[in-house]
Structure formats: structure tokens, C-alpha cells
Image (cartoon, rainbow, N blue to C red; front, side, top):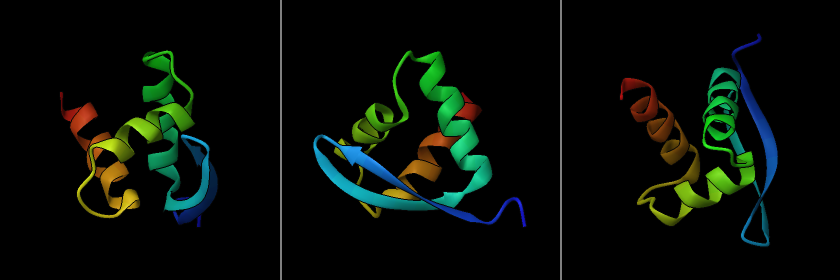
Amino acid sequence: MPDGLKKRSVDIDGHRTSVSIEAPFWDALREIAETRKLSVNQLIAEIDKHRAGNLSSAIRVYVLRAFKN
């Protein structure tokens, strides 16, 4: 299934972790990062600094808000 969960390793401020989100969210995250002239890791680090819940959920909410605005 192309839209299933995709697990990726990411580096957040020197700390390696893995994130599982659906493929369309990875695609959207890359698009947002390119628009902002950031790497995906930099964007995820920024999201991580402002999150309250788990990182995967914070990424999904960030992407949703970015596309709604």
C-alpha cells in the first residue's frame, strides 16, 4: 500500500531517532522544507522544539496547518 506508514531515521540536533508517518506526509514535509530552504531534518528539529505530544503526531499537525494556511 503506497500510503502506508513509512519509517525513516532522522537526526534532530545531533540525536538520531526514527519517525513513522504515512508516505503523503513525508512528501508534504519535503515540499514544505524545500519551500523554506531547509532540510527535512532541520524542519523536523523545528517541529520537535514546539511539540507537546509525540513527534509523529506533531509532524502530521504541522503539515495539515501548513497546507490550510
